[in-house]
Length: 336
Length: 286
Image (cartoon, rainbow over all chains, first blue to last red; front, side, top):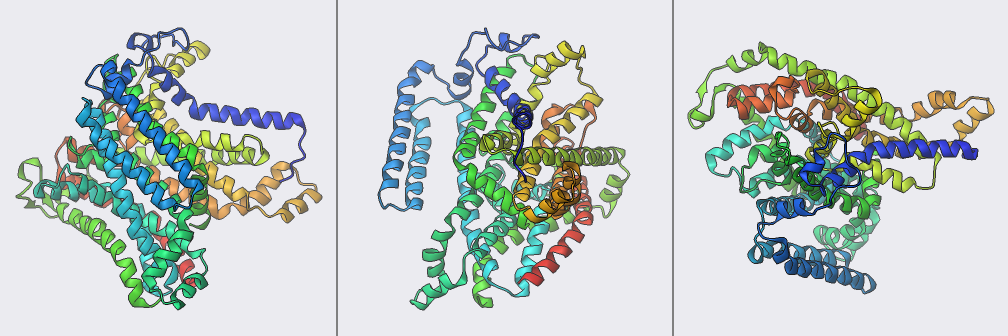
């Protein structure tokens, strides 16, 4: 569009956009503020924006079953570990180490640390819900993306009618209300003893995510010219080998984009987790739901701390992967 | 790629979908014909179409359906209109564009249960908006059926508009220059350009967003769960939420499955034309 606008028009546009952004994020700011308040301040009829006594007690109560002072050395050790991982990532970017390997090492160390933490510190149940969320998200991501890469690639290269039928059927599955297949799982899970296990939730999330993942990955694989893998196959590589060694590395940005949306789906899912888990495999959305019905005045601040804790990983995703997110949202829509 | 390689590559993915979506769907249809509660999980009784007739004559089911349709009619057009306006504004600026986009994406991608709780907190007794409504408009917000329903709609718009905004903004980036310039030469004003050039260009995208919007609004659950505080007095059940209650609160598993099957039929009535279009399109493109 023409962009020869007067400064006044431009100012008005910015003001309108700022108003929109404010409307979008104001609730988050308010909850962030609440999470540092004492219940008595959070329940004031005339809201206190400044001049309340800030406290980190809500976070300590939410995460720890031990005095924060005793947790401090462990916390410092964790921060040191994260700092080392950041340094490692920076060092790896300069060298020749491949991106996927570095990512795997970092994720592996973080998961190991997360699993060891409850052995050395007395963590509150919220931490075990957090761990469940991590297990379910990572499990869903790993299974979902590996099989969807194979499927998406096959759909991008095969021109037979079966491919089209699978694609259209997948779209139909995407539209299925969750209720239509979760109740049978509930029933079968209760009968078989799989109810409230991580694996049941992971498998069903993988299935829910498949239609979307194969469609999106297919669109990324279609952008890769066929000549590339044909050249690799001429050099004696098999179909699978040329796919793993040649195609996957060039499609990596597309795979990251698809992974991000899979991650969000698994991390954010409430209905399936609420129905298929109780305590053993309950994830963060299920955990926070217990704060949604209470009228207890002290709930506001602890629920705020829980909200901020759950949202923080997502905020990191937006900050570090914004480019991929927007690319995914835009490409899925423009092509879909 | 030959057929055999194709089948090998696609089989894990298709097996997952068949085993984990089609099989349970068939089980749901079968369970819909049974009388099952928590007490006789292992010994269901065949009752034929009784569950289906019970659902179809259940006034609470129709009430939930009515509210869900109302939710769709209000939120889907609103999210598209607001999303389109913001996308037009975004298209006018270069500076801070990344910031505007990142910040407005937050409500859309944050965990829905959390996002709803955060949104609801603004309207709680000690919430900021409750205070502002009182201070600026002298309006005392009290939670009742009407206000809870209004909050659910308001949240729906807040939550989904960023998706419409970002996809329409992406669509605006592919707008060809010539028709816009031709319109300028012909003396069209901004409104006429929007109506005669921009909207026709975005037509297929608008259809796509409406479709996604309708499907997602039809399945609205998380926000109802949080905003009503699971209090039946507010009478704001969506079909998904009523279905959930039927299974987990009332323990009527057979009836709940029959209801789920009926809602699937409802989805496909809307979806089938779209599936046919996609099929034709893909057949042409291959």
